[in-house]
Length: 142
Image 1 (cartoon, rainbow, N blue to C red):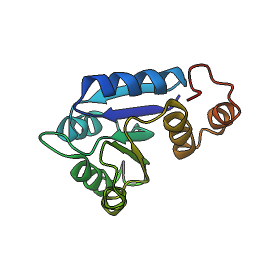
Image 2: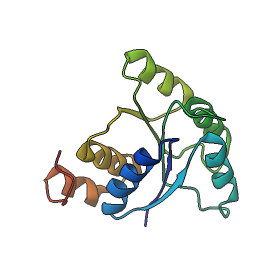
Image 3: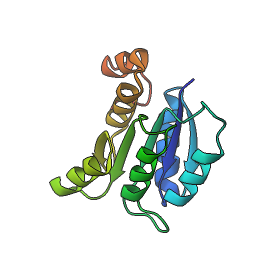
């Protein structure tokens, strides 16, 4: 089973992402900011890094860009995919995410199909990606 860490200071966004990603069959953990996310990452047993990080940009204590840079410095997470999801919708925001080391960028609110398909592709979950693309996943149509 794939494991995802959703990092966002808004409880409603975390709940929405947890529902969409969990319904796709993945295990989802949550963190309210970058600092808590780093603590969760470092507390995981060796060899059990998350398969994907879904990260907001604007958060207290540690923003998303800083978190992504920290994830890229750690050997256990340096190659793991990071999807940033933010209300910031300008081209320079996506460029800043890429510069920090993110692999993808979606604008909030991310549509269920877009979120799940992007996550599946980033994690190499071909079967889930095919089901979403074919419209065969309940609740993931918009």
